[in-house]
Image 1: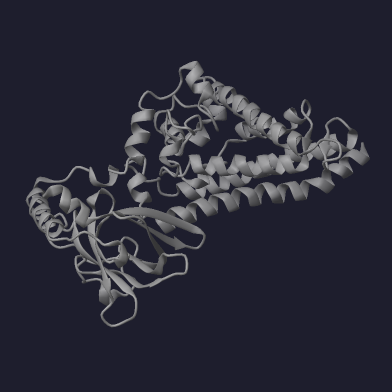
Image 2 (image 1 turned 180 degrees about the horizontal axis):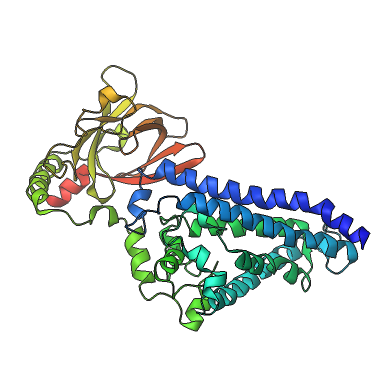
Length: 419
């Protein structure tokens, strides 16, 4: 007994540090991504009108740290089981090769999804909910910090899966590490509060069998649907998928979503006039010749803006200026200004007429590189432009290791279609 206790106490600090760090790193990473790209597009993918309650994130963090502690107490049992031979953890590929690693990891994810679905659904029973699951549902509008926000009994239920699974299925140590990473990443993505998955994850698409942020967010909002963790299989089979899931996901990820929000009657006249102006801009635009590269007028996705790219006046390279905006006026009919600029002295500049591309220079691979200013967050990023076809321009702006890509259409080509 003393030997087993020594093995347990020797393993526990490492397990506790890994469980805690995994949660903190994943939740911080997702929160950082949301902060960096909120004004750049993620705000339009916000899933609930309400905001998280005051003090919610602090409560979630404290509960999640407690959950990580409970997970570590259960996880350290794996070291005891391995020492005693009750479970098998492969240290290399001599006993079981890479194929077994991949297949056993896939099996573990499927088994975990099944375990989670039925345990989760059971915890919604009226006699169990208050004890097991109410703490998690205090976060009706979830955040990345909600991921491990469990009551003690629920944390025990979730933490028991890995030791129980290992009693049946031998695993590689690398497979267990990969499982832990996948589990926490999918967890914080499901609680992001804004849809972070692409349209490829929609129902009927090639990745549509996966859950999305919208899928789990509907569970927090409605409570009685969408019990799965990774996949939609059990919810589809048992009829527990929210009936509005497909409609809501497709509305969120639709390219037109950003331009179809309801507008007040006081802005309709201004928009009508803006459309007339846009028509004049388009009809006056000539087709962009291939030899001119990106020089010319381009229409951004959803016809949100028209940007004109020409040689810079006072510097080498090409520059791009906003010539028209679909949403160019505020609720009072005043021109929109560069209010998010980090330089306070620049915040009174109108967005129409603002230079957003600068220093575009030709690269060896046939593209152009320079800088792009994003008025939605007041930041300037590295930009890469390419012209894959005569009538399209791809533009990619990057910050840190994350890039967003857009396809702009030639205003000249649209003008030709209108004539």
